[in-house]
Image 1 (cartoon, rainbow, N blue to C red):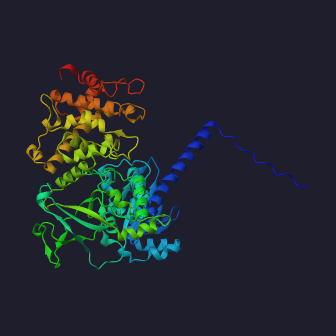
Image 2 (image 1 turned 120 degrees about the vertical axis):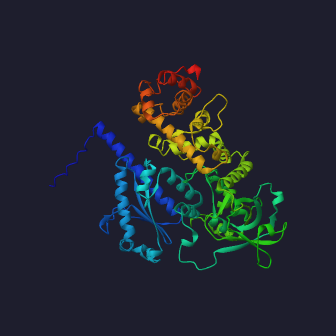
Image 3 (image 1 turned 135 degrees about the horizontal axis):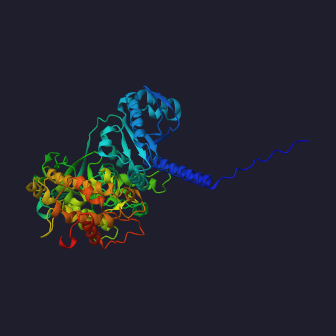
Length: 583
């Protein structure tokens, strides 16, 4: 008689073990979702994707393992991803060294991949290895907290932190295969670098039936030309200065692309197969030129009003900047095979021509002035549009006047966000979640501290700056940068002392110390004490704040958003020993 198999006893977990298991499962789900987002972003944009996790390769003097390899034509991305929250810099250093070995032994790297992933071997060896554009991408699920000095140590890596990945993920979801052009722009790739060496003509002539004379534009020295351009050419050559993208610049003013709006327009195109009659507004590159009916070149100043001619545009990626109409353009995107509308749209991309109105700036016009004009046009068109958020409109207003207190404050915030004391703590984009909101800090406190035109009887850091103020008034960018650096340095010094004397509250997510209420109170107090103490070194503020103790817990911190000044009164009297009513 066979013995019945003994039933395996299920081990009962302790409450602590259950908690640990639950946390481990949550971490695993988060890591899986993170890696899926990376894969989907590049696959949707048209890249081939190889999951190389666990594949050890001997490359040069090291055994190398990378998490993924993405490639499109002759563009190859070697990808490392991490969810770690500790020992990040050591991991980065190790990967930087491994990537250097791959770069120095690229033939061997391609050979190892070809041997392992046989189905992709032909595509991987489609181009001579010296034709490959190689990029090493380091993805992190958490903020890396790298300073400018840290970044300079690992110049062979491109760090893609959560906000940047979120941006590319969203763009690839919205416009699928056409998202590759945005990735190319991020990587700094031009059209002539992609695929085989192109010996053909690098420009394309497009007829422009209307030329607006200077006298009717009202745009100073800016000329305007209208012409028709097929959607496919415009998709390849355009770019958009989106405020919430991967670029770190105050010159960005456009809103994020909206998936629902893209879908709605795309459905309309598929059903109607008709072009749009309202203009796409763009900025044309400097290297355009004109030819007359005899194919002879002509300067725009030589073209008489409404004369028939051709405009010759460079056939280059990222050469035409869209000011208005991005959704109408990107609705023609190159979709995936599963897209029910793609068969129709693919034909329309080549056939339908969009009416484009292009601005032509004088070649000697400074970039800042060009951006100001662009943002003003966008603002004029969209001020009353419900879909444009107030944050975007406020940002445009900052671009329009770079010397305004709001514009300077915003740039100071961006500088502080790269410094150790506030490293990556500010929400500079709608993609930043759970960070310090900056709008109220700029509007109610910081603008008055950094303004170059303080009100009568008020002070600001500008009064203590010994730089070239005449150059500032001339909108000299270098002088303005120096003043912004001065503001950042002094705020960093002051808040370093705040952080040191409240280290526990500074690190506590439930503390109110890093709320806009507390930060505004400290900024206002700092501004008010300037007339007495001027700008001082860290030791001065450290000594003053050492005697200022306060409970910043949500329960005990009594101040509200309408009490910034009241909180600053307490700081002035308790920390600086000043009569708040007198300043």
